[in-house]
Amino acid sequence: MSDILGLGIDVVSLSRFTKLLAKGREKLLRRHLFSKREWPVAWGTDLTPGLLARLSARFAVKEAAMKALGCGWGQGTIFKEFEVVPRPTGGVELILHGNARRLAEERGINNWFISIAHERHFSVATALALRD
Picture 1 (cartoon, rainbow, N blue to C red):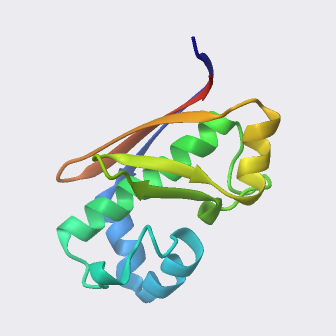
Picture 2 (cartoon, rainbow, N blue to C red; picture 1 turned 90 degrees about the horizontal axis):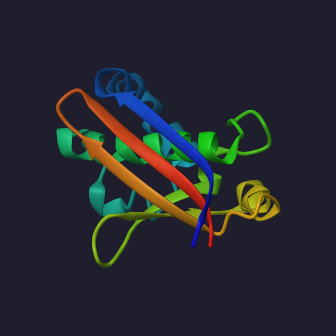
């Protein structure tokens, strides 16, 4: 049986997320928020609704995971330490790096359940931190 050690949720407004990228910050966000696996070159930089939905959902996962871990991005972790990658069977998985990984290990977290959804105006994600 697993113990629930944390739960986080985050909602991202697609209009606000689009404005961030539209201000010419795409390269900055790509470098500081997303890994190459999260924003592969194949996706390009053309800000289509599909790309915006995928990126905003991954950003929501990062925020939700920080909440579940009990830390924020100014409290010893950075966004790139929370990597959201596709599973071969569908859906996504969360991989932690650096301080985020260390914090999870210290708190006994060794498994994550992630759920994401997006619609026309919002993306939402939940992150459930578990000890198996």
